[in-house]
Length: 135
Ligand SMILES: [Zn+2]
Image (cartoon, rainbow, N blue to C red):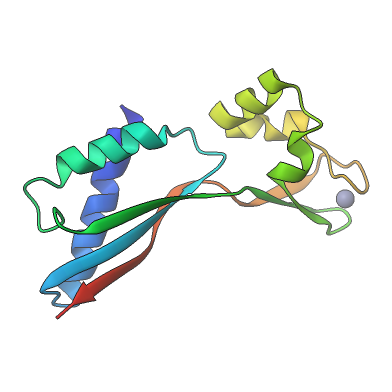
């Protein structure tokens, strides 16, 4: 039921933005979903559609967009994307990472210097990228 709580949080964020800007209408909103987040986009979309029914958001076009994960090595500074290392992983490993993002450090190493010490720069969390309103 994780997705429902998220949809609720996203909706209240959008409503707050609209209120602060005296919006008459909320035209469009874009939500980014990090690839490492444990989210089912179909459930999230469904939760959204259900939850906006009695809100000013019911006619808003809400776009959900996945965001690829990105890593940066703390040792050599090399940056790389999840896609680049996916092919070297077993299917069960990439699934484990998808559901337990912290496992990423167990399975992935810097492609350049082989260090397990890297930060996750992108691909975590769910956030509202922008809200388009009309006044
Ligand atoms: Zn490195």
